[in-house]
Length: 277
Ligand code: KIV
Ligand code: NA
Image 1 (tube, rainbow, N blue to C red):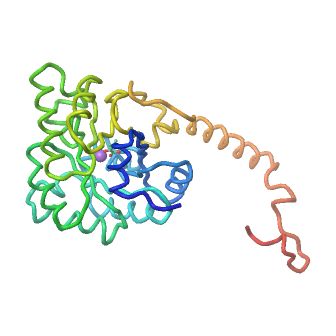
Image 2: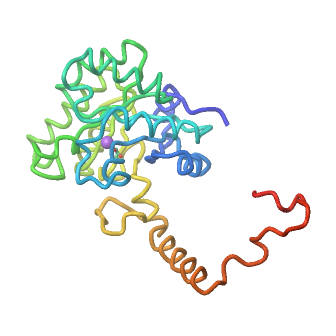
């Protein structure tokens, strides 16, 4: 299958075709999500929480992100790969943003980067885009600003705050972002923004009117049992399934039921069926 491209995503908005985005952090999951038809795989800094076990995304480094990007890129054939720029890898200066964004493409095998922030990040986005690196923007609830927001809180409630988020989305679209993630904002605001800008909006906790949706793969697959935010829908229960499978394995090891003869090698000269595969 032909690789999804940045211009193709813009055309999808024009044609009214919704865009399916999922996060991925390793090659095996990436292959599964790619074969399942995801248009975009986002190597999110959410890996700090679901892979590394942190409480926030703030400690994640560029080196760690690039390591995961490389694994995801190797696992895919069709999806566009977007690498999420971690906290403080693009805020200090435009020069640092350019250098780090470039590493995601050159070392990480990503096709684009994502960074958080609205109007204040517009100049940075414009420069990164100007050197040929596509940028996905991210406004509304921006998890790298968790302490400034006073927690993971819905943004854009009330007319003044709605205007601020709308201004942010306009500014990043005008700066050349090829898509804008809208996270944790009211449905009506996301609808207004989606109508106001001509690049695709990708919603998470932003209602049904966005041009696409994104979910954390671990959430949609049911791998985060302690966490069930309102915006998540679970399409599988892999944590429960995996724990049950583990219990059966442990029981069979203890009882001697595993391995059975069909999992074991004989002493006679090797046959084809003895191949470790
Ligand atoms: O890091 C992440 O997974 C994200 C998405 C949820 C948008 O930024
Ligand atoms: Na992120």
